Length: 396
Image 1 (tube, rainbow, N blue to C red):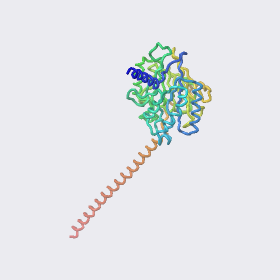
Image 2: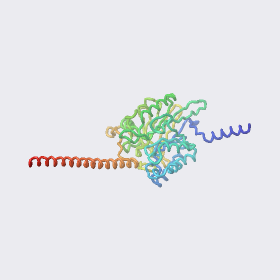
Image 3: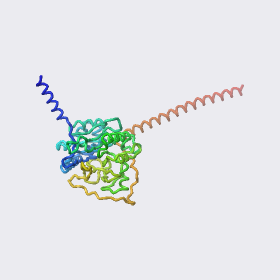
Image 4: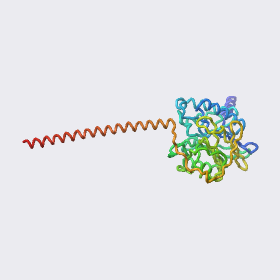
């Protein structure tokens, strides 16, 4: 009996060891390095996927990060292969996580606007990701917009400290109901969750990731020195549904906010005490960034808390990002680009609704014509009967 109990306890600890998730921690040099892969867009074209995986491998080998953040659009969900076969999600998840598994690097994801456009919802995709031992991805802890809003804790290099030394917030912008700027946005309930979480952690120094850029990125370009390129109008979200960036700034504990989505932009800069900016497009799929594939690297120093960031390109070079100073002749309109392209699902929905409205119009017009004809016929008969009656009276 004792032997059985001992073996049971040993088995329990072995199982715990096997399924336990990695612990994030500052190293002995008080540093912690994050690589941001954004807009990988696997599943567009096979040749693009090959280029993307080689880029990932090279960047990981150059940087050797402690954590990788996949900040949305890992796959091109509107492609037919994702709409027709949910197994392709598993296929590509195995592809782009394999370099991390081979190097024992943990990762976390949040969603872009294209990930959930295929056969699987973002909730189902998240379950796939969470099945991997090295995935630190989580679902919402409370009810709110989006699926993957959560926080990761980074332990201190000092083992005697029980509280996390830093935090990484992930916001899910793959939400709908964002007015005409329906790329996705951050809603007030997500901001409320952040405020409560920040308070619970005593405003621990942190950084954050989201897929869709906020409107303030244009204000950053217009008013502050930045490093990098502004090459396309941001498909961003404004503050109609919640004051996202103002809330982060007011809180004071989030020192960096990084995003993707606009493939051709890669600039960043200090905005009201917080470094905000784009990653570098990390995948060859979808439309080109017109730059080498790459990744934003964010290196945190524990004490005093500081952020260093740069872009590592696929060939191993660190990108030279020239400074852009505010200029009256290079002011961008403080307005997000409105959506002018639609996914296949949206186009199908538009066609279905359009066809229904056409059929309904034909039915309504036909019904009106039919009722009009009956009314005309009835009144014509009545008129003829009156004429006959008058005629008979006159004759007799």
